[in-house]
Amino acid sequence: MVNAHRKALERMWKDRCSIIVREEQTNPDTNLTDFQEMPLFEDQPCKLSFEKQTTTDENHVATVAQVVKLFLSPDLVIPPGCKIVVKRFNEVEREFTYSQSGEAGVFTNHQEITLT
Image (cartoon, rainbow, N blue to C red; front, side, top):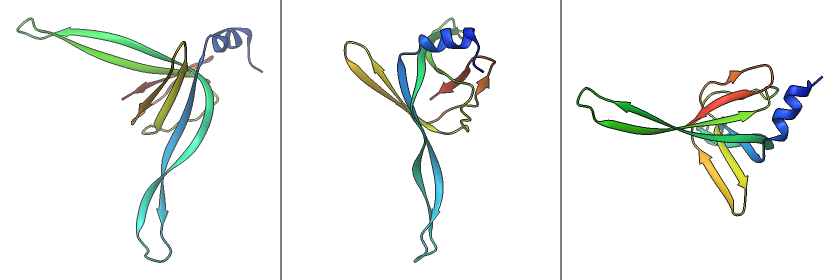
């Protein structure tokens, strides 16, 4: 049963995502193996978060990097390396595609996945 905290958290997730895995496919005629993208989950509620991280090297030069995290239900098992497409529905619909997902940090009410 989903608890009240989780329901409240998921109500704030306005983005939708599709998770795509690459699966090995062998052509029976040629015996050649190739990879095909296959949907694992589609149209899942989620929240895309952007964070800036600033670091300074020994020469006092600042470098800014952006960290992107995806928050979604802990019930979904998402292997590392998936392609993830996130749609954001604000005034203008936007689509963000990430080629590589990191290892999921799974918590009681959500999971967090770092995206590249």
